[in-house]
Image (tube, rainbow, N blue to C red; front, side, top):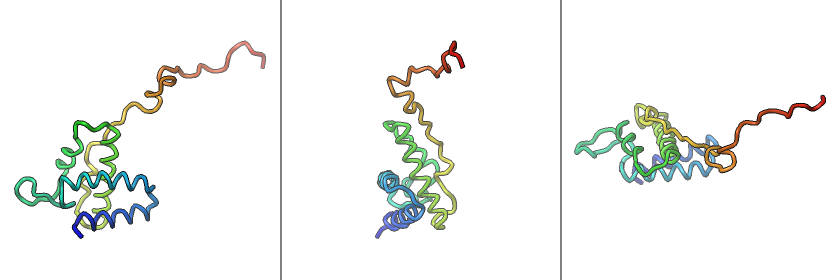
Length: 132
């Protein structure tokens, strides 16, 4: 087993123990697998020609993928924050690398996307002129 497989198995067990939904765990594992393609070791990298710890700049560069929507970016960041929070608690790293990464701002909730509610005005209140 490589470092990623061991770490993700342990992280997954902790997520289940904490009661995380299986769909969330599956989605976050997907993002961790994408992250693992860029960083073959969860804790260190040799991208610059020498081995060094994975750092905040690595995370920001990865999260800045131009084709990602804000919600994709938010999910990917959540996966990394969860994983590196676990890594810190498991004493695999000294600090959570992802916790200080910029939060994605997801604009345009359901109300802004729905054709009926996007132009709806707030309810003005009960009609006037009725006897009480």
